[in-house]
Image (cartoon, rainbow, N blue to C red; front, side, top):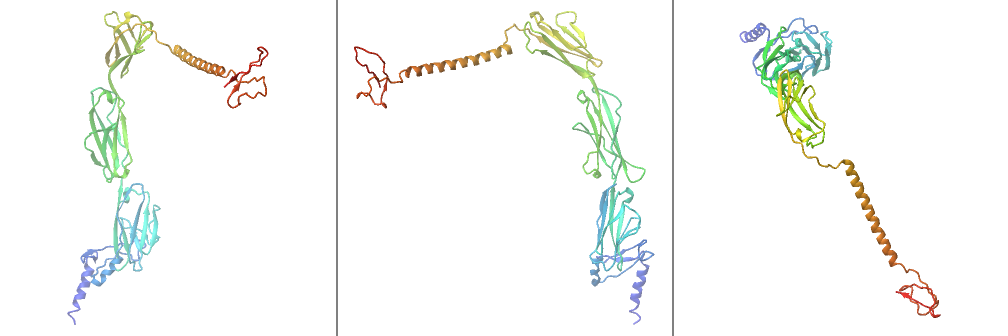
Length: 430
């Protein structure tokens, strides 16, 4: 009898000396289990327990709580939910990464107004943490005080929001075909953000994003640079640096730098009217473009000296065109970036009557009047014809009661009064 009793004592001794205590996991392996209950725990010290589970005890796994990992943006709100199937008449408890008890059942343990109770039932304990800071990141523990104590971990990840990027490196206006380098930097992201460049809708290929840890040891500062050659089409363009980070949830966070490019002028001559004729007034407009815009315009005509005109006004005026004004004209647009000359060949056409709008109006009115007169003539012709055909529409019958008078349905009687040899005269028109 003495020998068999040694084994239980040995097992009890081994359990007591297990470092930090140990539990049997679901798969039958030993695992360490520590618990610090905090201010509302029924025990003043951490409990360490070691249990050897038999197959009949596997049903107690219904008392194992479960939870989930959460990710929250700094400044947001996270909800921690702990659930258990069989509470065994015990309460659930939440504690923070520093093992400070937050809630024991529905009882608050830590005086932090950011932490609020969401739900407390025998099977669930849910709490919320608002205005989450980077310091709140870590593993939160949900415990249930059964025998042994069972716990579940919830890893809370706090995302650091990157600051609005800053662009440096642009100092003054750039000259056409000049190469420039711009730098972009953003701080406060966690994990490290990525930077991208674009010019208008065109993507620019900058250097890979450089990452540097911030002094707080939690967030990062990222930077990038881009180098490109400018053209005159880039004058007034916006160079945009954007920061991409999961905490932004697709929202745009970018900074733009408008650049100015100086380039030589261009010019084009436009006649008004487009097809001038002899005797008309003509204006030749010299339309100059550049940065800076041309300040002076020089007009010349090939084969004639000296220049026709040099002024700030870009138009050359011909008050009354002559055939002798035909020829090739040149306009030189001048700025402090250079000059450009445009040419136009003027051909003065012969004068020809061009119907004015006033004459056209009168022609239309005359056509309408003629049409109305034509309709009136047609009407008069038809009316006269009608009267002629129906000239004898009445009957004068002097010999009343005559037996040979035609029936009223078949004849119209036209009687003309008069005596011829004392006899009555009767005429019938059928």
